[in-house]
Length: 436
Image 1: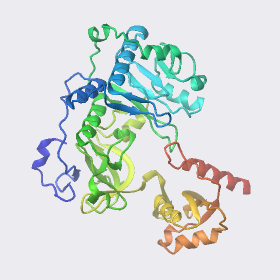
Image 2: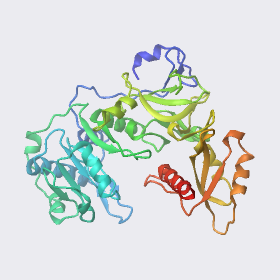
Image 3: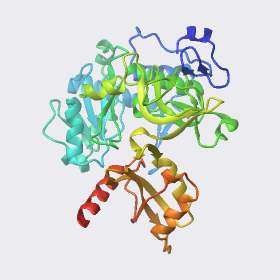
Image 4: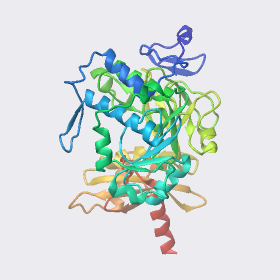
């Protein structure tokens, strides 16, 4: 957010400006680095360590929760430089080359594209096709999932050669002599979306995105709760202190250096506090776009830089953001829109229900979609379909009633814990076809 916006008539409680219809962050702005400065994420991170007077020899940087192995800052910095030297002198990577990895390693001035090791070979092939990496970093158990050889080869992170390279005491002088200059808007990483409604998308984050994110979190230096998207580098709203976290159901206030709008999905008009609409975000941490998908980029980012989140939200009278549901997950029953998340919350409050998910089902042309619940009974429960529907009917408007119930052993979810609704929709369609 630009400092000149402070001259606007911004409501001190909500951050809403009636002139621009934008919700502004009410917390102090965090100074950002000049966009003309050539600085990589690794260089910025190291500069923050030095500015904080951290003692590299004695301060622990990372602890492996599984093994208890720990790494000091001096060891971590040495490994960054050793890996950078290896990539530059041995592998020959250059600016904007992309590395596809199945483990979390920091690569300097190279685009990082991490994938979930649990992905199937076909899923990995799709991710690789989006941006065509020149090298792959993987582990022996997952190497067979990767397709044909990469131009710069494949590196096994658990190999003795790689481990020896990381422990080398010789850091080549070429690293400083041939330092790669990067632009703030160069791609720094490609992170894959969860693919809840279809194939995963490759979210392109620039050096500017990641540096702005690191700068913001470093300045705060405290644990926070909040909400974010891959497309916003994981940040969008935050809560600080005991008073803010007491706001039940909220995900916090607009994050530092961000602007927000609530937009009517039907008219495109921005909305004031208390009204529901799609959340739009704008700021220095918003992605550049989707790798290899110009159509999806154009439909998600508008010409003014606003990210259309696809989340149905509203701000209350104190500027706290509340998420109602995903727009794509709203069930269109006759002339009404039914939030599946609201029904799931109610179902999960039932003493005999362990888990639940609500999806749209298509009974006929007159009704359109109807809310259908997939529920997991708690051990020993004999809960019936009629009891579930009656439980919900007593708490919601008539158009929100659950009209079908199916009992299953578990709700399919992604590694991030998101409900895989498309699997349940396909299951419902298969069950309907079997009855024909």
